[in-house]
Image (cartoon, rainbow, N blue to C red; front, side, top):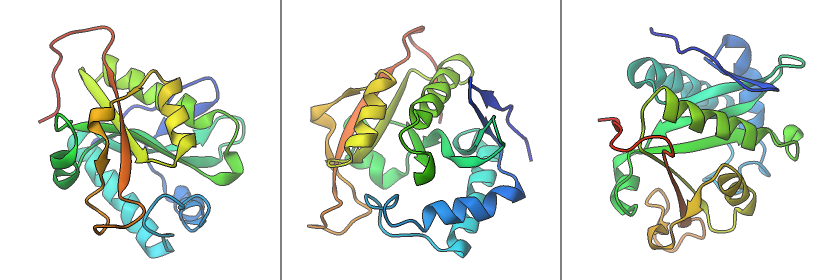
Length: 194
């Protein structure tokens, strides 16, 4: 499988998944506070399946979620990346965007700017190495921390793009999502993934 070059920031390495990432990642995903705005907490078996899926998708498409390691001690602190949007979600998003920025940072690492640092680095990589013209991000309407990260990396809310997440049943409190967008500031007419 093709491996992607790591993305480095002042404090982080955004890299391919390694076997040592499985236990801490599963621990993050089992945290009900971290998972508040998602369907549920995730068990170890599911977390391992997710990592396997991330590895395969990254190797196949060059898009998806990568491990985020802290340089100072080598700790896995979460995931981040630019991923392809699934078809049901694209269908309800204004303009049917193809890719989204995303991140998950373990609760022990919150409040230190890691999500913003990782997301900004992934966005820069999307512009300079993947030639994307636009990236979006979405989060539950009450997930203010994620909205702040989106704004800090230069994204702006698209009020016409707010949508009901189709992964949740009609009337479920987690359905309402806000959509944020950013266009590549350096180029026009860039390629988007197919």
